[in-house]
Image 1 (tube, one colour):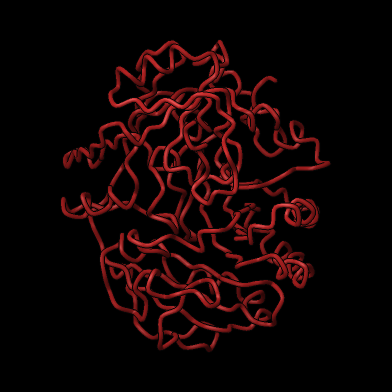
Image 2 (image 1 turned 45 degrees about the vertical axis):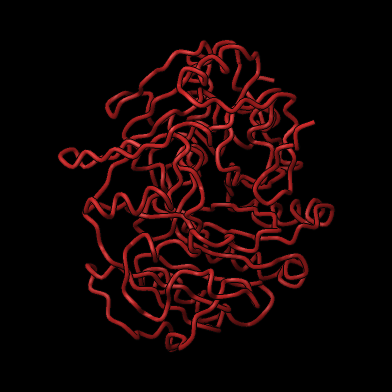
Length: 422
């Protein structure tokens, strides 16, 4: 019997009775067309049952390709390609992405489908630069959605529910360098009073905390050199650290990207972790909620009130900012946002009891949960809650019905939360 397929952190085992591993586009098309219920699985960096259904198609055996169009300033990326593999190719051609997520290990197709993001007051999420999709639809046909197609804003963050992404076209920009500095033990009261100053102090800013103590344990600042970066600047009076750190207390800083203000390529600084190491902690569960920027201080204050209880289960929490976009199911759709991320210990029963408490504390601020991470929406009336949080939800349902009238790609999570018909 084959080994059951799990998420990368091994916190969830997929229930699929059949797993296909196509090696060509034609094999992928045949596998999709043959299954009444099927979804794609890529680098498996989700933590929930987003891809769960009767049968899975693995994309990691398909050919990988990265094709840069210098004139158009775009790159076409095959579905299995990970950001850590794409970035050096782009950089060698003189181009860059506008941002990267904290992990370079994730696949491009999976990241954009779930609205995964980096950080920055003026930085939109990874999906915002998608300029085209190539999808295998439920009947096995290959369908292209171009930059001018009115379906593209609905299809990009598609949650795997309108087809299997065979390739993605992204907008790129000229390459640039970034320097990263970390500031330790910045007082929480100062951060909340001057939050805009802190998050606006660099291209990308992350706050790492356990919400229990009087200080933010680490403030990571990633600055583009072409934006006028000056080394050694203080954050609310706190100078940069003189040694490298890992976001999780006690973690080995070797696996983290270069700090100490040493300039380097964008792709070697914007992620938190190096491609060649196991990212983050490994044995973990992640949750994340995005709230409107104007509610940031109130939401952070609500979480600090839960600090001791959160700290018992946390490995670390992270706070980032994300700029608004116009993608229908993006967690930052139509609103500048603050992302409240939690990396939990793998204590599933304890987390099941705690998440409703966290969600209740954030409920006044209209939190949108990250699609690829663990959330409950317990007691919130999930379909009604999501319809309120996503004004284009009905349009997405109509789009999915056109692309997938048989409901082949409607997996467990999207059905359970009312994104598609049960």
